Image (cartoon, rainbow, N blue to C red; front, top):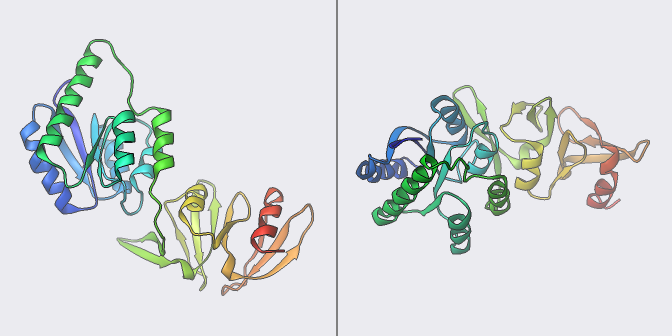
Length: 259
């Protein structure tokens, strides 16, 4: 790995990208900015195409947030977080990841980051081949992912991003490697999430009832016992959808539905 490092900026705030570009101009011997992305999905595409050595990454972004984007990468660059978090998180990131910059980024703090990167490159040239973004750091990131109240799920329709209110969603269903949401009026949209991610993201009004289905408990009209501890759920959506729960989810369904 040689200086300057190919660098990609990923942030959904244009002003933050502009400011970071301006600050990085003073460190062109360390960072060569090859492009930027305005969300995690675009960042994923740009990383796979550009193969940057290092990325400056925001966490809270549309489509895919920083954590979700990192989890989908096949090749992991060095990661410098540029976002807002509490002081405890800052110490944890500084101890376990390449670096963490608190917005608004200050010039002297970025200078220390540049020095830290130069030291890592020198270690690499001396025979060090470790990647700072280890499995333990990924677990740390997943654990520290910020929780916030969710009101809608974003889906892409053509060239537009549509926000589907949670109250309009009847259920989510995984098909092969994709997860679709179905609305009360019978529409179906492809999402960028896994069911596991949705379980962590959504409020408890959404219940995981099988390996492939998460349902809005407020949209359940009837529950019928099935065999092997399963249940059949009839929804109040336009299609009166019937869903069969998984064998291992029966107890959870009974508890959540107070059966």
